[in-house]
Length: 95
Image (cartoon, rainbow, N blue to C red):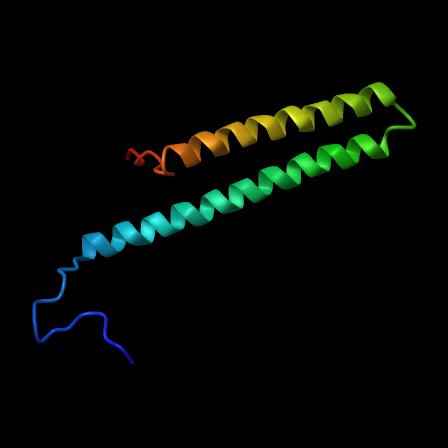
């Protein structure tokens, strides 16, 4: 197995508990972001399907559901673009 650091030539990089905790929190935020995006996509899909199901009974309500899902998807896409353009660096939580 190839070693990533040659300990014979120089000292290994300093790794502290604070750095490890920050990396753990970063991974947790990324996981939460992915779950939130998936939940939003499922919710938009639910509204489209609900609109299609009630198309025969109430066409105006069905169009409302589908339009709501389209506007929601457009807003989610705009937020995703802004988040990606900024490098995906969320604000630090304030405790």
